[in-house]
Image (cartoon, one colour):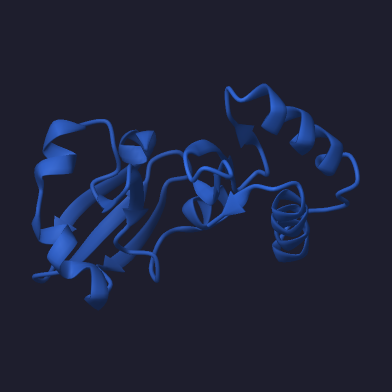
Length: 145
């Protein structure tokens, strides 16, 4: 969420097109707001209330935030991947979430124990590792979305 310090809009070139710069690398790129996300992008409440956030982030609902330029996002964003999995207890209550680096964020000690057991058997990263973790969490009784 704090990539607003690193992803800077230098100039708006069209209604939904922007020339941008990745400050950390000095790389420039053009971005167009994804057509299916333009309604969300038009609501500037979130970036106005969160000035350190990337200007292209918007709420998705249920406490989640998403990128509105996913198609054109720079490499550092594509590799970062905020949340890849939400984990719910058997009662449907949020128990934690996993980020793109396969890090678990949870205060639920039971979930942490299960996750630590699972993660020791994961080799590598990427879609296969994510799917393995998802399946094992479901086997352990959690709901995953």
